Image: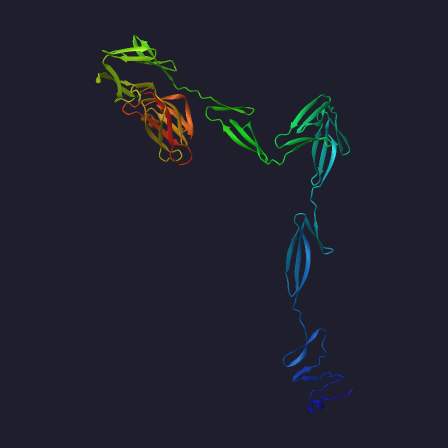
Amino acid sequence: MSRIYVEQVVGSGVGPVSFPEGLKVFGGKTLDLNGAAINLSTGLGVAGQLLSTTGSSLQWVTRTDTDTTYTLGAQNVSLNDVRLNLTAGGTGSGTQFVSVTGSGATTLSYNSSTNVITVGTIDNNTTYSVSSVDGTAGKKIIRLTSSNPSTTDDVTLVAGTNVSLGRVGDEITINSSYVDTNTTYSLDGSLVTTNLVNLELIAGGSGSGTDTFSFAGSGLTTVSWDEGNQRLIVTTPATDTNTTYSVSATDGTTGKKIIRLTSANPSTTDDVTLVAGTNVSLGRVGDEITINSSYVDTNTTYDLGATTVSGKPVIRFTSSSGTTKDITFISGPNIGVTRSGDTITISGSTYGVSTSSSVYSNALNLSLNNNGVQSSSVAVRGSNGILVSQDPVTNGFLIGAQSRTTISATTSSLTQNGQQSIDILGYRCYVLMSIRTSATAWVRIYTDNDSRIQDQNRVYGSGALTAGIIADVTTSGTQIFLTPNKIGFDSSPSETTPFIYISIVNRSGTTQPIAVNLNLMQLQ
């Protein structure tokens, strides 16, 4: 190895110098790198040291580790609950954790010895086994036994009439002791003639004899017998897809009968339901439905006839209750009155009789004329249910019972339980037969206005607060028949015109006007 002195290299003025065999600087000497001196008096330093600059020189320094280190651990907190712990070290401190919890059939556990977390599952499904056991006399049991939890559930087989049960292990045998004494049948057929086949039902077993049924084709349909296959063949040129119908009667719920139309192709039913109304009941025998009425007509009817009382002709009205009302004819000057059967003849040599309207209600004037000049007049007035009217053809007068009539009235719009009083122009005395309303309502009819005022604050469903009440009904928008009929009258002594005094309460549940129809017959 050659030696080159530093003084020689520095002072030579040459460029960079290479040292193929290396450069050795002895201890205690300074290596100057472009003005930065490296003091090598400390040698090469120790393991792990770094060459660091101070700004004016280079030196060996020991590196300081400021990194945070971490340790991962785990622990069992509780059953099925494991915590993962991350613990800081080095320049760090503290612990953070994550909890891992098993749920449902999933289990979780930590083994600190092996540092292993185990994830597993629990089978909570119920399993079943089936077996057969003996029950009480005549009974065998099919038993279903479950696990988790352990329970049993049984199906019991019971031997009925002509049946016995046996068991070997899990095999149950059902035996019959029934002896068949029924008649057996065999079927045979034959072609009698074209389009006519006889089927013979031949009894066997405990029976005997043969029944024959004939099948004949009609129209486009033909019948034949297949002897080889023992079958009846019915042939039509096309498939009939028309729907056919049958009608029948059946029972519905209480008070109802059903007329049922049953179709084929497809099979459906359509019903018409008959509902028994007021005074009507329904009965059924087979397909026959009977509609019966339980209504009893309590109206008074009259028969008209003629008779003689005390030598005088009389027109007599005989009621259905047996009472009579008479109109007596008395002969006047130059007037003769005679009766032959039910015919009353009024005669006179120069007199005639005519009728004309009267100033009274329900009345006609009967006038006696002498050669066309009225000589006297009498008013014939009906009362107590007797109606007097003029015959438009003969100009005579007709006498008969009053006919029924309907009187109506409508309230203003009433709220639920709203009340209104109405006075309807009516009769002094009348027979009230029925009441109809347009919606559900509480209707009360009184003899006078004072009675209505006394009763107007009465609570629905409680007793009347006055004696002057003729009718007290609640309707549901239908006609209510009053049986027996009610006798009504206007008892107001100060009234010159008779009225029917009504109180109406809306019970329909909605705000609306209520219309009331009274079916009655005038008596006075």
